[in-house]
Image (cartoon, rainbow, N blue to C red; front, side, top):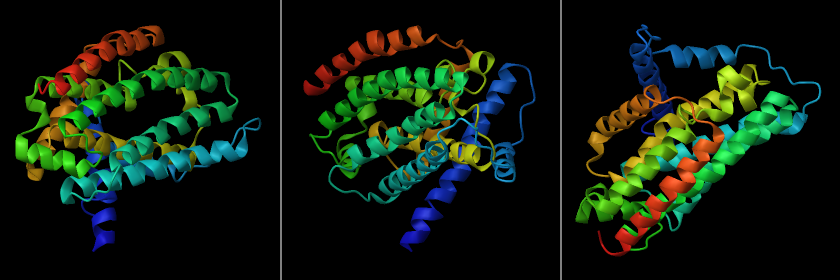
Length: 300
């Protein structure tokens, strides 16, 4: 029964399906914004399947072990994070400090995208990995501020089940001023974490092609794509758990709203330069987060 819950429903397989459809919704809306038809709903799954049928090529000058290990670790971390989030949201399965564990698990995929880029020994991959490193230092710190707001509003607990219990008893955190600020921070974190315009700077196709992933192909690139499919579901669900937890059967409605907002932001903004992205996170969102923490401490 536990294995079914973790890997079938509402676990990894379910997350993979919903994440792929969520990514399709974002791609389909982008196509409509650009007066195109867009891909069919199963396109993301077909693309990943084709990668696992292709040849795996390791560059001659690459650091072979790190090059191969990076997508595998990224995939494993995304999978574990997804299982933890689904179990905590649907069954309130939790343990002391699990929100910190989830934060670190969510950090690992981005780190190993960076490691994979550096291991490639390709100048464009190095440029993309350097950009991802700089962006990571900005959006992860802002997300920590967002988490602090939730922890304060939940009485200092570090258990995600307590966040859910607090919102069931006292109302959703989103209903407070500090909760709205925290959600804004988390939303832009989501946009940057998934590498969506205007924060697709590390993989800028028109500039550095695929950035850190330029040398990846076949199953190794497939593991990176699977990681992204998982995160397309689990990161929005994590944010919903933190700020908008309520009746679990409404989660699809909330998830689709987040994906729609992500798509709108993507299609009304150009890609930012790395300097402008860092300025946005450090000099706009960070001070806004400090205001949110003060409001949370005051009970607002």
